[in-house]
Amino acid sequence: MKTLSYSFLTAVLCSMAACGGGGGGSSSFSGITLTGVAATGAAISSGTVEAKCKTGTGTATSNADGSFEVKVSNGVGPCMLKAVDPITKTTVYSFVEQGSTTANINPVTHLVVANVLGDDPATSFTQFTDTVASNITTDKINAGMTNIRAATAAIGTDADMKDVDFLKGSMKAATSGQAGDSTDQKIDALMASLIASDKKISDLATQIKSVKSETEAKSKMETVVGKAKNALESCPYVRSGKIWALNIYGGDPVGYDMDFTAGSMKMTNLSTNVSSDVVLKKDTSGKTIPCAFTSTIDGNALEVRVSEGGVWAWAMSSSNQFGITVPQQTNNSLTDANFAGTYPAIAFLNNTSYGQFADPRKYVINTSSSMKAYGCDTTSSTAAPDCTEEIETITSDSCTKNADGTYSCTHPDGGSYKTILYSTGSQSTMFITVTDTYVSQFKTTFNGLIAMTKLTPMSLPSVGQERAAGMEWSVGSYYTQNSSLGFYSGENSGSKVMTVSPQTNSYTYVIAPQDSQPTTYTRYINPQSGFALTTKTNFKSLSIGSPTGWALGVGQYVPGFGGNFKDFNINIRAKR
Image 1 (cartoon, one colour):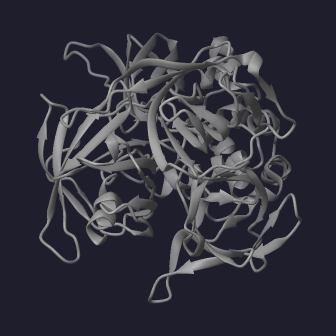
Image 2 (cartoon, rainbow, N blue to C red; image 1 turned 180 degrees about the vertical axis):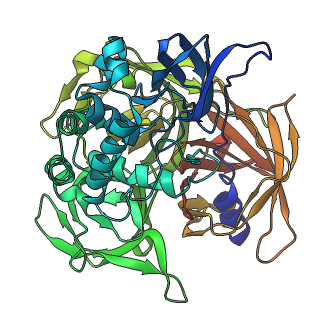
């Protein structure tokens, strides 16, 4: 039992690798070169970056870490810049005055542009004229930054941009392989406040564009985010507001109202109106663990860890229950452009007679909101799976949007789905609760949860890359070889990349268990499907990940269990 739990616990380590695009150029180039980092909290990887200058334009693709280099042939400043996240279509703007060539592009610079120009940044960029350019001066930019710093200070120290040069200063944006620096975390805090209040950066920009003073900027921010200005201590990623709690084993989403007001933190069940105290999680030395808290629900001890993207993992060890939590968003729609695309997915299913098993899938959502599901070939032990066999279609006319923002859908073979859409600046995600849905493989119905996050670029790590012990926290359930079901939660051990093979899209890494010699794992990635396959002797797992610090994994012994994946895992990047 101990060996399996450790194998599965570590199977999704190194699960989320960064990727890149690039700028590049010629030594004979004549003009200006604009550089910086594009981010929405997480790095904008492989995003389109455009520049419009008083004279000249340019376009480039951002790298894995969000860095970019835009060359404007014969260019003369000032310039406006635009960056588009390829996954969510989130668009943010920035600018540089004449004589400057450095400008980050992020939600905070977006607000500065709105305030300085007194207009929607998209409109100013589209209609970029000499009149617009004449307003991009050092004095006006400094005045705009002063106003926006006052606005961010209104939502707490986690977001306060005082003394932070978010426009021209160096910054490290979060990727799947690394947490962001302090500037990036403050941007995360701003985005988390908007997400928790069910708002977007464009909503705030509309309010902030007309402010003329720091006092007015602060007031506008407080009006837009409301109680979401309150964050969990030591965690800018989780804010007061309504959330959905989803159980990995199925059942309708449970709504809670989270209140992180200092000194009186509570979570209240929206159906029963019963409140429970929220307590910061401490380590053995009494130090607060970032983005971790505990509570007691119906007599059961609850532990929660939060990712940078606002996705939580929760565990109730006493009842062997665990799952995912996300902020409630009522304004999302399946027809939104940011939800169209390809999603690697895992269906976590269970049945009283058959127990639990996992079904890796691929979903493709088109612009008319219909969803096609594809089965994945998981037989290979030397390649991450492709997913090409069409298994079902859920059409838009089988789904109805509810007042709480969820969708109720009817499965074509019977049973029902409840769908939750969750979108941030860098991820588009869907979670589907499954009730009495027919599974042809077993010729009976199952309950469970389908989790998916839109396909993001994947690439191989570097030899020698390490993850420190305790950098991740995992919760999951697993089967032993004698078919007993176990449960675990806790911090993961460290790992180190030993070899990398571009030819097979794979790498090896070692993890040192507490009671034996280091164990070697081989990991294969599939950039087309979004899945990663991890193998070691007699065991393999599949996982999908997000650039904002969370991943899902499933595992199986080989041979055994008829080839089904019966081990479940949720992984959260714990250290920041």
